Length: 191
Image (cartoon, rainbow, N blue to C red; front, side, top):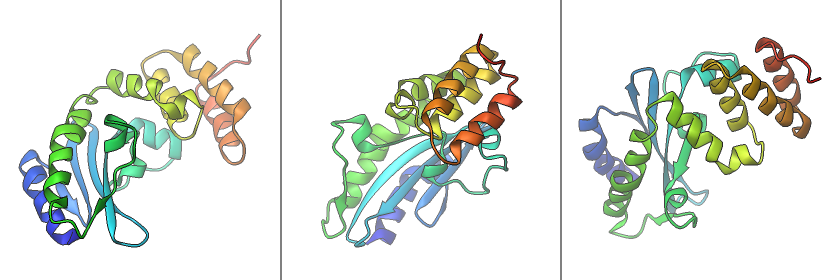
């Protein structure tokens, strides 16, 4: 069933410049990488779709490694599922339902692609990150991505203030990551 769904999604996305590897599609737009991805449930009987945009500067500075050759949705700088753009109820389709493929293709066309298109600039990605629940809760890696993009556009003070709040909240491996990034961005200690 997922092979049939992937073929139907191919018919929508390939004419738009997307290339597929297994259940994930990528498209290069300038420096940004657009992503649409299928995700199977643990039982393999249901699936959902998500989409995102990867900003290569945010990725490489956060993870200190090059962008993967093919990007999956969890690696995106910003990403959404259908629920994020509708009623906030996570949507999983049954693979036994004959209307699944058509409904998924419809949701990609009507919701996920417009989200991608609306986020084809640094400013738009920053706004999406700033408005996200993840950044409001100072979660990683989204908060780090936002700080990097703020710094890239010249708002070092804003980036450093965000990283300080993040560092003070976060536990584990992200704390030294925040410290390293603050050093790289020349964040002076607050007075």
